[in-house]
Length: 591
Image 1 (cartoon, rainbow, N blue to C red):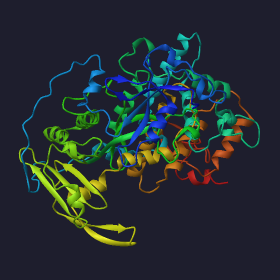
Image 2 (spheres, rainbow, N blue to C red):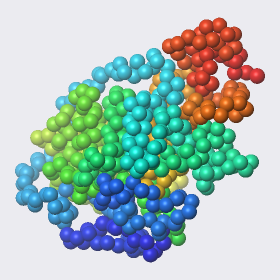
Image 3 (cartoon, one colour):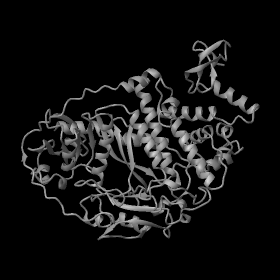
Image 4 (tube, rainbow, N blue to C red):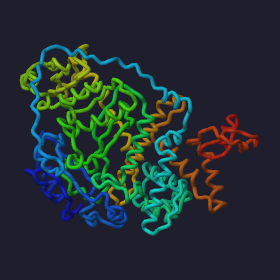
């Protein structure tokens, strides 16, 4: 982004938001001392995100520079790592709908040196829905369509056609064409060109016949430019994500409906990268500045996304009383989990979210929780001073328990001093962990409390999901502010489908790349435009039939003739869309 291009940025200065240029923001971040609280940039939708203007493309991705983007489309916010505190009076003053209220003084907690005695019931829940999915033996496409199901596809088709009609364009989008568009977006995650139009070029170094044979270039561009997810006449002006809110609601419902029922879950922040034209020369050298939409995510320990909500900051999201914004999002995630039953779930999160108050609220809801915690959020728990603990041998720790609510706070010394809090797990049984000394190049075993060991094992779910999404994320994007968010939702659905594949399919598991390739190929081949019959369709059939990639035999309701032996069959190849017996399946796909 050129230095002359300005973004509306939010930095607390008293009770005002200071408008700064992007280069000024980056320079301010560069001046931060290492070791101080980390700051990041995240993009918020424009103030008029529900207005009609934001539906318009700001320019073609190949022909415009970032400086040509309207200033009211981009809004960046610089926030510290523990942003969103509901106790920040300055930030509360910025919310016009909120009146300043007197803080409720709570009685001091009584801390005792003993281990925790939790009273939660043990985990005994079974998951009949997952057993049903295993019995169905769904293909990768079948698993992906658990989330982008027929209802969701038809909804997007209807809203896109409605929006095009409002613009006096008779688009006539069909579900078949939308699946072709989705297939191209998925394919762009592992095959990308500098310009998306190169997929259709006849040049031998770039032409991609799978894409070119599925849908015409101009038709794809037209559909992609009118892709829409909400009725403009029914938008909530107080919701900055109103343009994509119906899609968020549908995805959250489908994600929770098919989520594995597990005891352990992770909660954290994910970042949906913003694809703006910004020159790397304006970024601080060696500074991990991230630019994009911040998304609150609740996942299983293996990385299945159960619930998500894009962040709008405390200006648009009112935190629960007594909690900061992050803690309020944890409570919302727990409420979503408990729609499947009030079970003793165990949630793990880091110091951005943890507080003794949050642990107390979750305990009253019957939910276990463990997380690292900042010292000022421990409600004056009288632990050993960090400097004193550092003088002791590695593995030393101190701990106290709140007598009234059975909440433990532990301070442990390893490479650094770590504070951790839990309402469910205590010190015992303490174990040993390996500590690597970089200077001496040796390994030694140090003592480790039980709650720290369990935390390290289970907290990484959001990170695993981020890692999976980042590998082959959708590369094609438009200039609308929510275009990259749509790619994020598609990637999250593919990640979830692959996680279910790993659980349900033990004999023929494939890795994430092969899984995405299968979905993309089936969508492009099965939904290709067949208006031009002849050489093109015959070539497509011949090449895909013998490629030995992603052929699955599935049941079909209507009996057809087998493509090999020509007798009646009720099974077919999902990729080839040809009836074929199980006994003929291998022979049909070998030259």
